[in-house]
Amino acid sequence: MWSSSLARTMLLQARPYIGGQAVLEGVMMRSPKSFVVAVRRPDGQIVVREQAWETLLGSIKPLRWPLLRGAIVLIESLWNGISALNFSAEQAMPEEAGKSAEEHAADAPRQATGKEKAALGATLVFSLALGLALFVAAPHALTWLIGVVAGVPLDTSTFAFHAIDGAIKAVIFLSYLVAISRFPDIRRVFEYHGAEHKAIWAYESEEALTPDNAARHTTLHPRCGTSFLLLVLVLSILMFALVFPFIPKLSDKAFLNQLAMIAIKLPLMFPLAGISYEVQRLSARKGTPRVLRWLVAPGLWLQRITTKEPSRDQLEIAVLALCRALAREKGAAASDGVKLFRDFDGAIAVP
Image 1 (cartoon, rainbow, N blue to C red):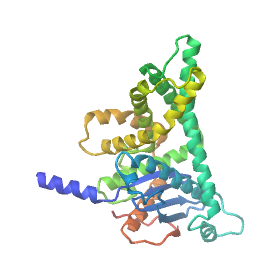
Image 2: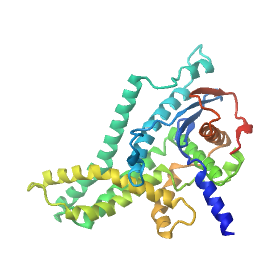
Image 3: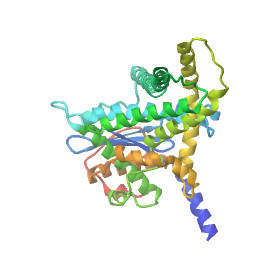
Image 4: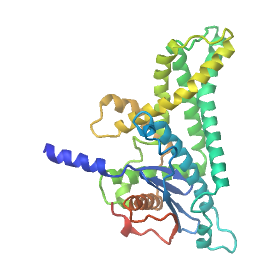
């Protein structure tokens, strides 16, 4: 019995590690080396872009070690995710007058030009800056101001400061998700998000990759990006509460001292992302400790907002993207480029 269990564990570990992301009218799937985006166009046809996963600082091996790789994976996911969103936006738009679907698909570049990469880089930097401002600087400043207004100065050396800071982050994050979920276009994206999770569940359950098999699974997945962000938020309370009592006051002026504390928090977000990444991966394994399941449970609850039940058409897109990513990983489709599918071909849906 134990030998068959060990063999099954080794087989699962040998299989490619799959992640994904919902895009406009489609799904992006990634394996360790491959990056596939499938989008259903307004005419019903499916456009698929396949390419190698673009790594950042990939030659520096220590950055791929546990506890360090999380921040790099996050930045890479943002980089490739923005590229996938741009592609999906182009393909989901109605066709230009006098232009066929094949011509429209051929317009998508196989590799980004220098200018496009520069624009993508600028978008990435802006996104990171906005995220840090909204979820690090603003909650910290608000927590300090609450203490000043209440006449009970809150100091970063106390757990209360970081608990209130974390509560403000949670309110901002939850309010943002609830607000955008009311837009019909975003709800469509959330449906594709659910399709992405269902397809990955079918793969991880070692089932044939078909829309029908995927449909039987839940839309909630422990390795979801939404869960990751919430996990970062929770762990930040613990990390900052442990670290900041040892940081001395850097200025006699309260405002300048708080700016300095915010500046110290920013680089701490990178090891925090690394720790959160490892915790999330561990929590997705079978037989994970109960304490880890409790830690990631709020992220699963939050996915009830960010994932919705998909239609069969949406499941087809997710399964197709996953199958193409696995095919590339096995070397069955090594060339980069854009392919046009007239319809979903169930024959490819084999793991």
